[in-house]
Length: 238
Image (cartoon, rainbow, N blue to C red; front, side, top):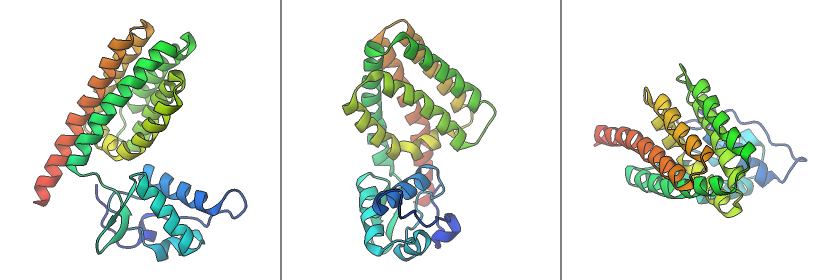
């Protein structure tokens, strides 16, 4: 999934940012973040300052500030002799990220079951069915990821924990590539739907610990799929 294109314009046609709506720095960060998370800029794509300045119509200082922020978020990395590139997690990083996800998301689900209203519980079950319907018969990774985002939106809202929300949302951005790797495996979306139904069913029964375990199982099953593909990719490059 690593993009080896040299020209940024071949991968992404960014538009000049609006100089009125919001601070330029925040607009540039938002535009680049969205392009990375939507896979318009793919892992390994070089982010050449000169091209970004020309496409976005902003100063070198603004571009550099935006790249520094995205580097701190884990979406961009600086590679010697290449400069800034869209981050591509290594196998070791992926293993750690998945384990962190399992711990944090299971805690988030536990808080959801403890704090969510009955209406939010039902919305979670509906989000799972929306995910199952949206992913049935499609190989479009963006459709799959957007459908999964709906599940997390309900969980985050019902958990009512700003601290967990901030941490989990930051982590979700970093692992979006890994989620795409996992969801792209044939049959994985159907398995994921069943795993998420177990989370929703436990939530309906107000069994917080059971829902948390089901969530952790879901994340670790996703990890098996994604890590298998990453190991295979690393083996091909050795």
